[in-house]
Image (cartoon, rainbow, N blue to C red; front, side, top):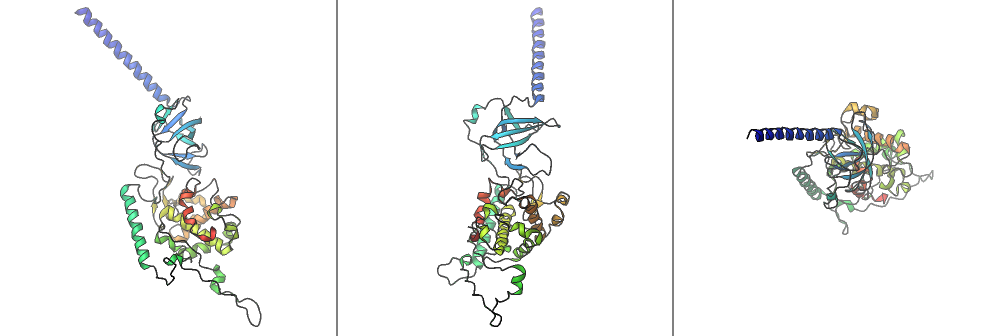
Length: 393
């Protein structure tokens, strides 16, 4: 038994040493993280998909948020000074399928699976659900209870609107939205001078506020109609925004040919007053998508599940940066966003500087600030509202 026992002890020590070597090899392979031989990735978290390999704060190059389950082919990579990697990938599933993005690969987070060859299970399992960068109600946590609260609130607002809407004698009309706009009265001429009658002072100062036909819809909160009312006339907020858009700094740029892009195909045929009103309706539509037209709402950076909503905490109707130090680079127009006028001026100035002044339009630009205007989202978020503004279509 002596020699046999001795042999067994030697074998056990050898096996333990062998296991230790395997463990060291495994740890070494993990420490390498990314070798450059990998050709495919599968995301296990939410990633900002960028147009270039610039991941600094404040750089507005995020084209989409790629959700957990996104699969992609690696086209190129670059090692960063931090030791992490920038990966250029082409997605093979989800809403962004076929598009190229740069993503930040943090080796410590281990939120990316890498493969040298496309895994066989990719062909077997359906593509993962792709989340939007922002929900219709971005300020609420993305939980079932929050969604249910929004639905109940919308139903209640609709019931209140229907109950308080004035009745019309028009037999072919449905509610206040479809009340026909009366034909303008013929111009009167001065019997002595023979020239046209001088406009009333209020119209001369702010432009004619003719009723614009707005198609009826239940998909917009009552608060939004403080800009343009359901009868097509300006509300209190709309008058303030119209006044800002008419300022010398903005008016010529905002009313130039094609400024609203595909959001208003007939823009060039509109009068200057109607162009201004079309812009106010655009901002109203965007506010509905960003905040449900809530003036003081807080926009968090992530949902309860960890999905990325915004790179920084936002505030108000158009999700402007809440931190004044961050807004400081945007200039004096964004100094104070505590009021509607302040938020409107800041938003108008951002659009003016980053898109319109560069020759871009509201719908076509690489430097868009607002997610709902992105090319892959505006058809389902902005366009349904814009089509209600009949002068544009």
